[in-house]
Image (cartoon, rainbow, N blue to C red; front, side, top):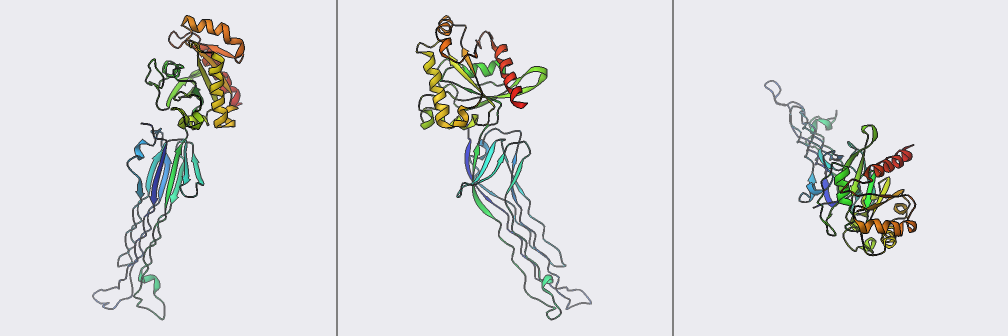
Length: 329
């Protein structure tokens, strides 16, 4: 299961109550007030963890409440502050207020943090209310309640390259060949049911991250098929790697147009991202024939490959790295 949306309730800890107390010692039977202040409630903090890439750990944990402050005590002893509560999330998490839908922060980098609610302040003890005219105050403050709110967390994976294409275009096979990812690979549509990230080694030991997404079908931007809910995960990518299965019987240019239309209908920004078109399964004779037949009707810069035999994969990786390098200049 790949969880990329979740609604959670967060509440800061309540402040501890102030204490009503008077000094009572052997030679001071009627000493002055010595009630201490209550501790402050803990905060709830969201932090990006390098060990997460989904919200699966939040599925069965909806309410997050920080620790309350400890009540004040006699002898002017302050109550201990409540501990802050830390919620770990994957990089690429967008935190919104559920009711207003306002974006509170886009957490992209490892270690990024956001305080989402504050704890309540501790109440003052009676020692704080002593005056020249009231030396024995018998009142103290209650601690303030911690802030609370509902949050909507949305995940947009952060990758350099996003793989798109129709179901069974060879995306999972390719990412398993060029990276350290191990997705399920089989010769039937919709093998990929959730996004998969892989790290690819480039020149000089440099690396880039590739995201394999479920295959798209016509009407995906309207909710058809499996890929529509994952389109958001390529919004952050720098390059789109568009894979086309050239062993298909139907016209290849139509397969290309279907995916381009879905990207454009989902987001104009997404449609304008730099792309590399890859002709897959070139080890199959039918694919070689289709490549000769349809190449002129597709973008000029098309890279033919076979992930099975590794034919053309080095050339493809070089093309990817050149485009990434150009974008970073």
